[in-house]
Image (cartoon, rainbow, N blue to C red; front, side):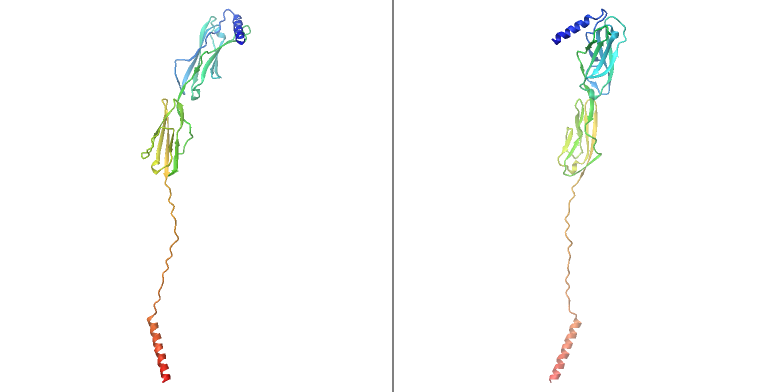
Amino acid sequence: QDLYYCFVCVFLSLSLLPSSTEPPDNVPISFRNHSGPLLEGHQYTLQCEVHNVAPVENLTVTFYRGQTALGQLQSNNTEKKPVTEIFTLNINTSKEDDGVQYWCVAELELGPEGPQPPIVLSSHQRIRATVLYKPQLLVPPHPDRITITEGSPLQLNCTAVGNPSPSYTWVLPPSSLLPSNSNVLTIKSVASEHGGQYTCEVSNKVGNVTVMFHVDVEGLELTSTKLPPITTTSMTTTTPNSSTSSTLIHRFIMCFMLLFSVVV
């Protein structure tokens, strides 16, 4: 029933048009002088063709990016017979445009005497943009030097996004045998030979970006146990003085003689 009502509305609208009025029968959209993917940061021209429309001076065309109107243009052609009118709009691309759809809408406004609402025809086919852009890092900036203790884990990250998807190439210190083509380089246990400069080059066919890491590896400090100081005690042997011994013997003899004289 709704479809039948729609056909009736269109039929009545067209039957009310003046004899010199022709609603557009096709509104294709394209990029002027370009086909294929777009490049980030470049300017391109959208082109909307309105076929077989009259009077063209009453025609307004609106360009859309998704559901956002980019601009509205009106013809300054005073031709009364049906013509094909081309409208253009310049756009500058960014990586956020990758995957969005562009389309246009043609509106023929004939005033109070024309059909209400005005005749509107949009693009049958929409353009889905593919935007190529060079790799852009997703990780925050890293310190100029990374200091890590021997035996600790180390992870170097240079994850990026780009279209087409980027590839990763690592240049490692000469003594470090860790070939890798991943976005994250992981060392489970750092050794002294892992110190040095690491370079991660992220690239696709649009461009490249280089990230450098300088790693300093600190050795483990050996903790020594201090023993208490050793105290040496020296024993001194006292030897009797010879003069003292002679004096004692002499006194003993004198006492013995005195005792003998008393007895006799």
